[in-house]
Length: 340
Image (cartoon, rainbow, N blue to C red; front, side, top):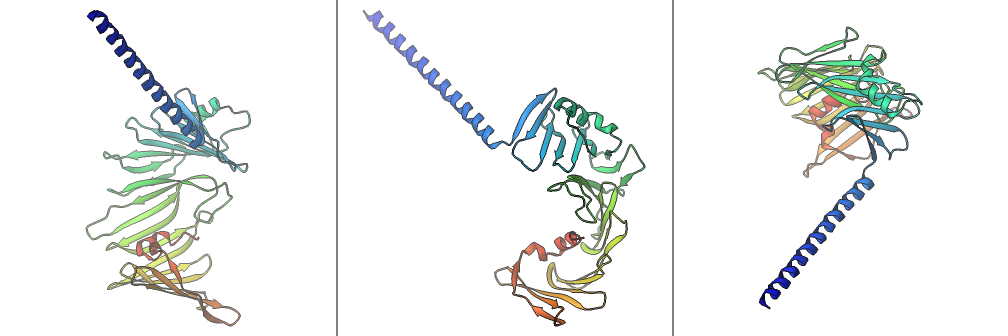
């Protein structure tokens, strides 16, 4: 009788354990289903495995079609974009250390008869043979820094000075355009290189910017302050604007000459803060004056006067607040060519 009691108790305990495991398994499966549902709702990419690559198609954008191609490590190896006006692609190739060794940039990568498999093969292999594509091959030093960029198809080359470094940024324009400015040519994908010389013990160095292999901007710093700069047109290869800085105590005057519109601008900084701005025409007429006031709360208020051609006098505008970074010396110097 006692044995039967222990037997019944053991059976009951086993049933409880089995029921508990079943509930736990059901709970885990429910969590997995929820994760999958959330991913499919929030994710705009439809993924397909093609050979050793994951082919991701953007399903959210209605203005353009785009593809991202990843390898088994999850690295982006290519991007493509088409928006009805043109097609663009960029492919990345990696060395044995996992660093980018080559970049291939081109247009018109596909046709209506191109399937995903052919596109993957082109983007990961055949694009280097695309006669219209621009190829960038990187040479690195022992620390992995890029010190030279060259084209295996032409004599184009970008070289840093000893001890310097080359970095790059992939530019994605918000749509296919024929031309954005004289510093940035049309197309969805672009690559911009920044060549920076080493900073010496006195805070002197130089920076040169290239769009592809074309030099577009140059900046020089002395004693950790801006000294001079120039912008070069991609279209005409002529200098668009020159900047010259003069320093006296805490006051730095940044003078610019715009050869494109024949305008002259002066910016007066005290420390790193912009306090005054003026713009005049080739005939010496002051077209605009601005004074910047830093309030006790740290906000920057601009008091502006604009030249009225009907009365031939400067007229005051209503004061308005500006962001602190817009009046910072370093940011002003870096962004001074943005409207060219």
